[in-house]
Structure formats: structure tokens, C-alpha cells
Image: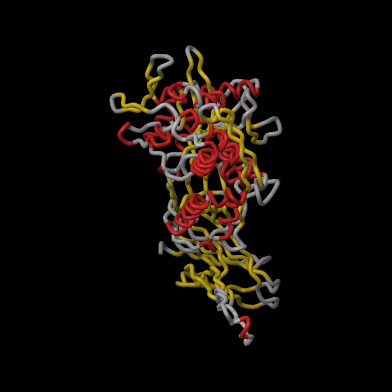
Length: 542
């Protein structure tokens, strides 16, 4: 049997990345033949030559009419349903019998978006085979959560035409979370948690709220903004430097397409530099009418220029939390995905809307963080390694909606200990599920009473201590803001669903198990640790 060589492919609208499982059994991002890990999803043509990745991106300056970019989101869509806004500086899509295509003057041919996707995937596959020295046996692809079934089918068909065996297509935020859990956290199944994954792409931003329960992921809410992304930060810099150039030289750099392309390329480099440094120099030879441009900018100025873009990105995250009917303090973790996540200001802005108990994963907070631009492909590679040895029919059956669309527990189930609700199974847990907790009990033999409740989310508000009065007239010319009340999430019991009494062993511990089947029927079991007696009861669907 041939040795397995499976990939995780993140096919982005702006950039793509590839990951494989190395000899140590770990997912690793692959560099293509040009040494690039983030490969622009761009194809360009000149005569009989086809360019790909950064080589194709360089063609945007002099050969834009033969260069196709930002076409991923057009896969599987009719021409009437697309928004060609992001094709302004590259070849424009055309309507071919209702489908999306591109006229390529260099070849005299019209190329469909599905053909472009096939060519792009083929080049990614070839890069992986050159890197690993082995033929690719399969791949898991990632797509946004709003990709329709038609788009997924069209992507699989394009991959098949590239002789790429698609094992599975998974959602991008799930891939990012899987990479974080499997690689960053060492593969251990963490405690139940609720996670926001925010993917800051070049042409769009996506956010998802995901419930992670015992290693199972459930997408609770999604939000998308197709008008904001890293490219808008480039545009802010282009506008700023364009005005500066015109002020200095009396020559416009924003009326000529070639000048705009040159400035856009330089501003993208400047943006990346400012993510790592507090200042950057800008230099473009012959920007317009043969005039060179030289300038510099510091990070503070850049952050002011990008403030409106940052506002929209933060608003998207706030919106998705609201769509999940949650508050920021209900979120345990935030995972930032995409190259724009390297921006320190954005990381600090997102951290500011969540409490200190929420962990915001971003490269500016930890030097050991995974590269956010690689999370999707790494997670896809992990998934590919898990299913590589299964037959395709088994994978398809296991990922069928009948299997994956599982019912979930609407409210948490727990035990009331004194005045505290101790959670056994959290809400949004897919069923069937089984959880066990250990509680303190009397250290003397005797009857032990346990009551099982359904809970409901609530907010505990602790008033802020009043500010000390200041009688100093000199310092009373202004009013200080009143301190905010402290808000924290709690679960309070709402409905008793079971109670039991059993004989304790006097060892100070009891064990309570709650098991919920797919019909949402709960089986409750309780026993003293070390004892033989088990009290068991069944509670019907609530």
C-alpha cells in the first residue's frame, strides 16, 4: 500500500496556504518553490507562460488585464450573484452564459472561474509534491461558513479536475480551532469552552462563535463583512501617501492604473512592516510621470488612518457574540486568524471588549503563538491525518448531515451545592453526551441528598464601590467618570429535574454522572466514591 501523503489546503480569496504531516507526525506549513508560505491566489498569463503566486502578483503592475485575482468567492456562483468590486486592479470577470469567466488577451481565450480554481489547486498540489518528494494522496480543503452546497460541490469538482482527491471540506473557523487545540495546546481535550474565531482576510472578514464540548465543535453563530479587510488598510495608506505625493510634486499618483498598482504593492509591504516595527520607510521608483517617491510613517499615524477599519472589525466580533445570544464575558477564548491579525492595535482593540478572563490568542501577545495566517491549513492537515486511512464512502457517511446535525442540550444541567450551581453538562453540548463530576460530601456515614437542576444563564452585578468625595475645590473643576459595576456570568438553577438519596461511605466524596441520549432523555447516576450502591434514574425529554 502506498504511503499516505495528505494535505490541508486553505484556499483563500487573497492568499492560499498548504500544510502536510511531517516525519514527526506534526502538521507543518509548506513553502512553495519561491519560498512563500502565503501564496497569493493569483494567476497571470503572458504569451504561453502562466505565472502563479507572487510571480503572478507582480504582473498586476504591467499586465493587469491578463492577471486574475480574488476569484475564490466566485466559485459555484452565477455571474448575476457576484460582486466584482475586488477585481478593480486586475482582470474583470465577464458573463459567459450566466457563469463567471475572464477574457485573457494574452492567450486569446476565455477562462472560466472553475478552470482557474483547477489551475490554482494544481499548482498548490505540485508545490507540495516538490516539497515532500511524494505524490499527494488526498487533501482536506477549508471554506468560509457561508459557502453554499453549490460552491462546495464546484470546488470539489475543480479539485478533481486537478487530480486532487478531496477527503473532506471543512469550515475555516473549525480548522483554525482544531489547529489551536491539536497543535498549540498539545492535542489534549480541553474543558468545555466557548470560542470566537475571527478571520481577518484581505477582502472580507468573518467571525464565528463555536461551542467546544469534549472535543466536539458546534458553530453557534456566524457573521460576515464583505466590505472590510486587510485591503482596506492598504487603501487607507494609498490615500494618505497619494495625497502626500501630489502635495510634494503636483503630480497625481492615483489617476494612472500602473501608479496605483505600484503604490498598493508598497503600502502592503509598509503595513506588514508596521506590524513588527514602530516605523517604516516608503520608497517607490518612478511612481508617476517618472517621479520617485520617498517617505516614512510611524505606527501611531497608521493606527489613526486605519481607525475606521478597526472599528468595523471590532463591530463584527461584537455582532457575532450578540447573534449567539451571549455577552462578551460568556466567551472563554478568542482566536485571531489571517495576516491582518499581526496588527498590534487590532489585537488590543479586541482584547478591550472582553474581560481579562477571556484569552485572546494573537501573535502580538505570545511569541510562541501559531502564525494566524497558517491556522486554517494546519487545522485542515490535522483533520486530513485523522481521516486519511478511512475509505471515502466511510468519510462521506460520517460527514453526512444526518450524522453531523446532532441535537444539542439547550440548558446546562448541574447539581445545586449550597447556593452554588455546579455544572455537569454545559448548554450547547451535542448529544449523546456523558459527563461525571466529583463533589464534596460528609466525612461521616449517613444519607446523602443530591438534587439535579436545569440551569439558566444570568448576570451577577456587583456595584462598584462609591468614589471617595473630594472636597478640594481646585480639583473639582471636572467630573470623573463613575466606576462601572462589575458584571460576571453565573448559572442559576431554574428547574429541578431529579433528586436522590443514598447512603454515604463517609469518605468525603460523591460522584454524579449525567448521560443524555439523542432523544434528549437524561439518565442520572449517583454514588458515594468507594461505595457499591449506585442510584440511577431516567428523566424524560424536558
